[in-house]
Amino acid sequence: MSRKVIEAALRSADSGELEKPPTPQPQKEPSYEVKQPVVPPPEPRKETESISRSSENIPLHQAITPSVPGDPGRGGAQHTAVQGRLKRAAENLGFHATIEKAVPQGSVDLALQKGDRSIACEISFTTTIDHEVGLVINRLKAGFKSIAIICTEESRLTKIKKAVLGCLPVEEASCVEYFLPESFITYLEELVKKEKATPLEPQLRLGKYKVKTTQVALTEEERKRKEQQMVTMIAETMKKPKKPKK
Image (cartoon, rainbow, N blue to C red):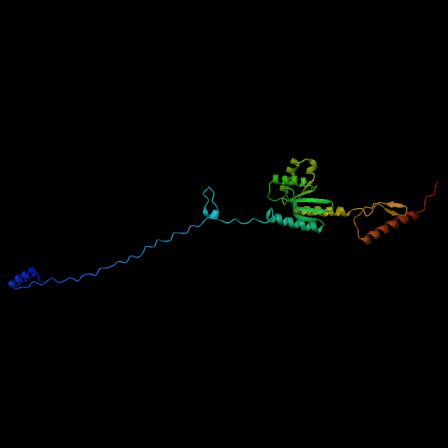
């Protein structure tokens, strides 16, 4: 023991009290704080715009809206429907019909061919009047002698006709005709009727008589019946007594 402790014990003994040694304090165990690693929050994904935005501030929902595919055909559903309708009607009348026939600098909406006759059909819905005039000029250069402009609106046909007459010489403008779809089919039917009204023979000889015939084409049975009627009529005429000469 140290001297200081002994002296303190002696003083305490003299005073009749012993000084209690100090109570040892329990030692605190050291605490270790475990720090959790800090994980940064994930950054929000940036959607890449598939459509390039112009210099103007276009809203994003408009910029990325997918475009709706257009109607088939050059003029859409109406154009295609009229094309098909006219093609079927022409073929039923004996025409060879070609949709989008290739020609220099473009294609004809509907090209019709029957014998020596050819018709370039242009179906007009949404194009400009100037565009239609350009088509007429192109078809004339391609060799078509007959051009049909077809539209469902008479007012539009009138505008196109006025523009063609004002831009082309009279002999070229006269090659162009203007129709509604229904009236064009009627026009084709009339053409076919006129073609059928051809002479069966340049001349028909009945005995010493020569008869020119021009009539609508008939079946073989109808033709024979008509000829027999003519023979009978001529025979009856020949039976009439001749007037005596004075």
